[in-house]
Length: 280
Image (cartoon, rainbow, N blue to C red; front, side):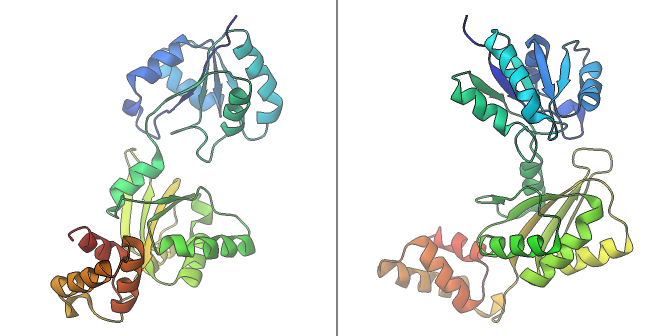
């Protein structure tokens, strides 16, 4: 008997209308649902009148529950893996189950849907051409500083996305300001829900706001490169920047090196210089 298929099924991050038709079909058809929190998932299943049985598969039991899920799959039964919200394996349990299935030649498929990092990036207004997803930052102060130092070069190249709980938000933002200096941030909370809020501003202003107003709800944060402007952007025309880029390109510079050099020389954002490079 061929094994069943493990379906990694994305679920809504807030608004239940974001569930896909394929996800609903799969949740009805599989023999079992492995859920991060069965109470949370049961709310979703009840809403759509789906009677499929669900078992808990979370951070604290994922290794002991792994064998029973694999046994079900080896019996030829299909299983759906879901998290509380969004796409499983992204800072949620599931990666080890996917790996175990692939090692045993058990089919794995994905039913894509909402992912908070992508929603927040779109709403941030920052360039979506490239980005870094960093999950949850460390909780301890020393590890957090090391984490921020590690990602500082990334931040200077592309937006960085991470999650944070409300009671740890200020510690992250304040330490980020210490390590990175001033930068831009989009602080997104309650995404797709009734009280969705996206604050797009300088990091220092976000810190001031949440010192006055206690953070509530889970946050997805999008940071953009620090503001470096020793020369005002208005002090040099686009044509002058293009001329400098043309000269570098003529001497063999590739995009990354040319953009890096001009950005540092003129104190301009990488994003602005790269957009001009694309015009060449």
